Image 1 (cartoon, rainbow, N blue to C red):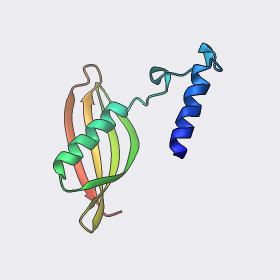
Image 2 (image 1 turned 180 degrees about the horizontal axis):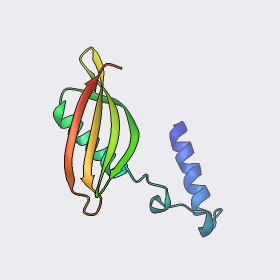
Image 3 (image 1 turned 90 degrees about the vertical axis):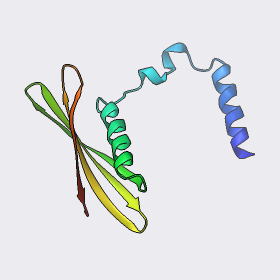
Image 4 (image 1 turned 180 degrees about the vertical axis):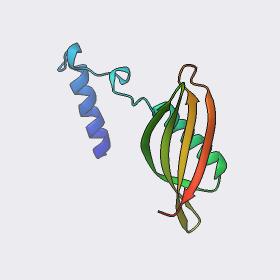
Length: 110
């Protein structure tokens, strides 16, 4: 019931015109990190490699550039049965075409 009241109140505020167009923010205007595409790929590939694991945490570790390629670096923390472990994922890609060159995985316990 409380959620219904909150949603009804929010709808009333936005439909009342209380906010001018200059204050409305659309999803397209929000800041989307440049690594978001690669983060989704890292999670997809990790889930494929570890199909019985649950991804419990995610960290973007940065980007390294070299000539016409770059490497997006991530660390995902997984839980499988009673075991928790980290996986470092490096996605190397061509910076001009964004074609993936290589994806590497390395498990860690910390």
